[in-house]
View 1 (spheres, rainbow, N blue to C red):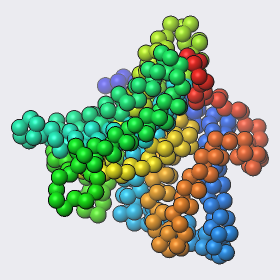
View 2 (view 1 turned 90 degrees about the vertical axis):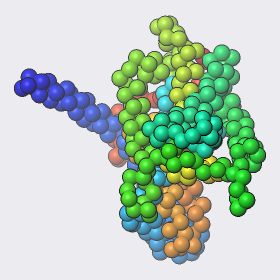
View 3 (view 1 turned 45 degrees about the vertical axis):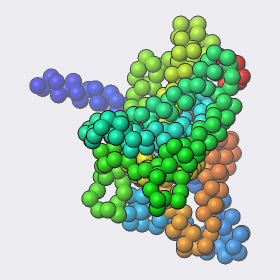
View 4 (view 1 turned 120 degrees about the horizontal axis):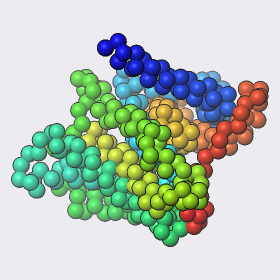
Length: 395
């Protein structure tokens, strides 16, 4: 037993050493400083915008006070922040995974919508089809898995087009967003519309109790559900996949240099399609978890913007699963705290979009941050640049 304990300590000691080395290299190279300073700078410029727009500088401080209170000021506020964070984690992980494969998945918005549609249909329509109630342990996972697979299948199409024809995934995923969202609109206004006479909006019937994710707290005001834990688990799973498996190595190799990957015998077409499918799987899971854990139905435009904001989440998190979780927490806080900010100051909630855009700009244009805060980066080692996307027909 002593030998086993010593072995366990050695394994975890080695992992801790590797994590410490990673953090040290990240700090020395500025990889951790850039996102933090980007957020700090964006908040500062946002405050200046408020002061100039209102002519009252104190309103900037009051706006951020409201933002803080709305996001973290009470157990309910923190719970809602984590609820808002959850779909960002799923969709951000999907986009980050595609980035590691050298692919730019802008179709998360459509994949998320189709994932929500599929999960809602399985949630309300499947029990009558099978002639009775489906057990919770089967129905709920089936709804989530069905939504995730819908997103995966939708994302695999531009992945296949990229791998086989060289068609750029950015163009294809943008176009397929329109198809997905308009298809969702047709279904919610037609075949899947809630037939209740009191319903006046485009939405599905409520899903069965057996298809719902459990809440984490008994207090009805705290809406945090088990989907949050699933999101954290998926972040760990994606990290393990990318850096602890052969498939992850192949994905990263194709993303960094497809020509070298082909020379090494890696099946480029299969890896490209699989990477996009897994990216869509995570985005579809975001929609499925929203349906099964929060809304208990799919409504038109309930998820508006999550898929596009997730691009900023992935970039802010430096396309690392842990960074995605932290960036998703920030975006969830901004989204949740916006209402309280507007209530205290009458500042439009559009300010949050301005701050998010500034954060994305500063993270993407890293040289600006390094120039503004030059002393902090003096002597820093330049980090390896990841290939986020490739040109037309480069596979």
